[in-house]
Image (cartoon, rainbow, N blue to C red):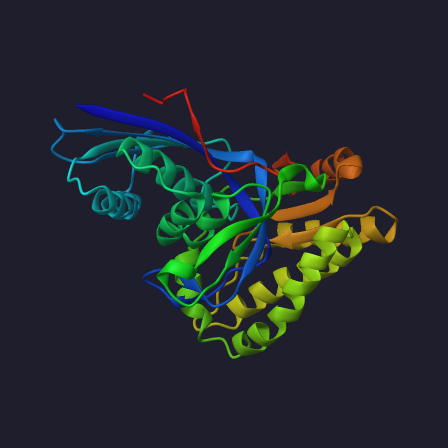
Amino acid sequence: MLQKATAEAKSNIAFIKYWGNRDAALRIPLNNSISMNLDHAATTTTVAFDAARNDDEIIIGGVAASAAQRARVIAHLDRVRALAQIQTRARVQSQNNFPMGAGIASSASAFAALSLAATRAAGLELGERELSILARQGSGSACRSIPGGFVEWLAGSEHTNSYAVSLAPPQFWDLRDVIAIVSTAEKQVGSTDGHAAAASSHFLAERLNALPTRLARVRRALFAHDLAALGAAIEEDAVELHFVAMTSTPPIFYWSPGMVRVIQAAQHWRADGLAVYFTLDAGPNVHLVCEAKDADHVAARARGISDVQQVIVNAPGGPARLVDNHLF
């Protein structure tokens, strides 16, 4: 018997970052985080449970998964199998429409899509909260790609109260995230290792002390549609995340000369009157946040920077959803 489902989930960009875990095994974070789903950065995943199979088959981007990828996906399938009380092996095929492993939260969209497709293929219908909790265990930021639009991950204190909720739907604010891609190479230090190293930074405590006030600033700016206030807060938080990474033991450097040139360009554009602000993920690429009316201008300027290989313009994206077009 073959049970199949396909899901699509959006990546997200964090306005307030997740960096460091209270519980690494369950990926329970040290702090709340706030993000926006990205409508043009998506993962589509098909999962089929087949009683005739003797082993799981994992295909990512058209090729067999690496040993590390395979182990991580199978561990997540095992969580779904435990929930569904089945032992059936599965075939999983997944594809992105944006670069993987380059600091554009590909694991967020990947594990959100996998969670929805696998649970439905296994005959489960989880609510948004339960699906967010499940996705979190595969990749922390994946829990934020389950709800739609502008999202807050409630850090919680244990497994059942650490999940994401939608603060506002995609259409609430016509923001754009213009991703200036300066490198598509897979980063040398993955986010999982970065989270583990965070506690070794003496600056982490200062960051955690500052976050409640900054979270409140971001919520206020979001609900007031105040881009200047939002921009100031997200730039602070982006630099702070990287400062924690750089002051970890061993230090982690995601920065590159191309990244710095894009950031400096954005600062010059803003000084000239263009309302654009930068944020960063755990990778070398720069997210330029602006309102829709300025997006074409920002994208054109970004394309004019010699370091920029590709530009992806994203509006706020919707929740993870089932789709009818299976990958196999």
